[in-house]
Amino acid sequence: MTNEEYITLHRTEDVRGLALQRAPEGVDLHWALQQIEGWQTATRKLPTWAQTEGVWFPPRLSMEQCSSELTALYKCRLVERLIAPEERHRMVDLTGGFGIDFSYLGRLFREAVYAERLPHLCEIARHNLPLLSLPHAEVAEGESEALLSRTGGYSLVFADPARRNGAGRKVVGISDCTPDVSQLCNALRQAAPWCLIKLSPMLDISLAMRQMEGISEVHVVSVKGECKELLLVVGRSEAEDITYHCVNLDTTDPAFISTRQAIPPTTSAPQRYLYEPNASILKAGLQDQLCHTYGISKLHPMSHLFTSEELVAPFPGRTFEIEAWSDFGKKQLKALLADIKQANLTCRNFPTSVDQLRRKLRLKEGGDTYLFATTLQDGTHAIIKGNKWF
Image (tube, rainbow, N blue to C red; front, side, top):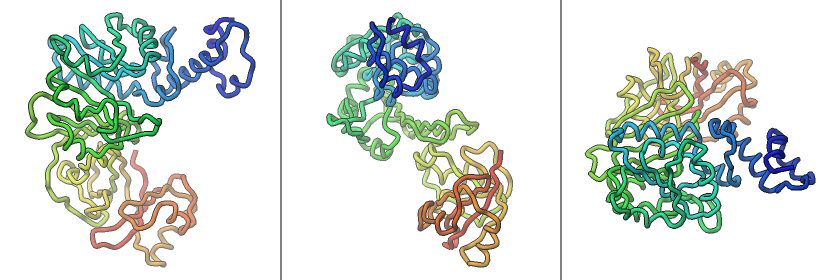
């Protein structure tokens, strides 16, 4: 039996169970299981790749770290907006990895260079890229910094620095990643009019502002409410105002695009509707500006929950119709929670954790009831009961 036959036969089976079985003669079990596990991950994360016959998949760590198809397509649309078709001459991906982002960005340019220092990933890229409509791609093995001085320069430089140190531990600081793009910033800006840098969603954005020059746009990208990527658009000239793009892919949330403005938020007691901003807006620190964009008020300057009498739709986050609310007086709280044994509980600007409060209120997790424990504009603690608005 060949590797390909074994992979096709067992593609949907549990990899751990297969690992305990004896491999048929002629099958490299380690390689075959890597391909089966990679394909199973790709069916969820990279459906187009999973449907492409003959694609090789890397070890688990590279599959975990690579972009999803959704976020790769987002970068593609971003670059299409930044660079006109007639100006898309040559691009380089300095940190090719498994090549997900490169496979989408590279199709936009007449010449595309995939750079990677790990030989096994270069071997996979040489095999995969022609299968993915990238026969013009050049695979450059070795340290990527040398490519920045290439004659003629580039239309775009893309980099997704490795976020693990030599011991394999995760890092989030720009200077701790490989390559350190904060040290390469001048070289990046000289090499191309536009650079797109992908960083950890855990990174402090204000720290990135201090370490990198030429940032014109910050994109905070979430998928289904989970913050996945922080993208910096770096140009040769300094931008007067940095534009923040907060998006939540695979949802109906509208994109929230704004510059950072020092305008104090308005506050109000709970009204008819309650709003919870999505993770991208909270990560970007733009929640206060929702007051002025949507005409809504915060429950408290630090609560990051909003309210209005008239419905705002669509809203970049979750919307609830308030059924009732109560402070923590025993009688009022007992009336609010009567007959509620199970609820989705959220704490915002509240002195105890969700787990602590759930135990105190003797509530099971889940169900159709939504409760928000928070602090109101007058400083009192309250619980708000709401119905999710669909």
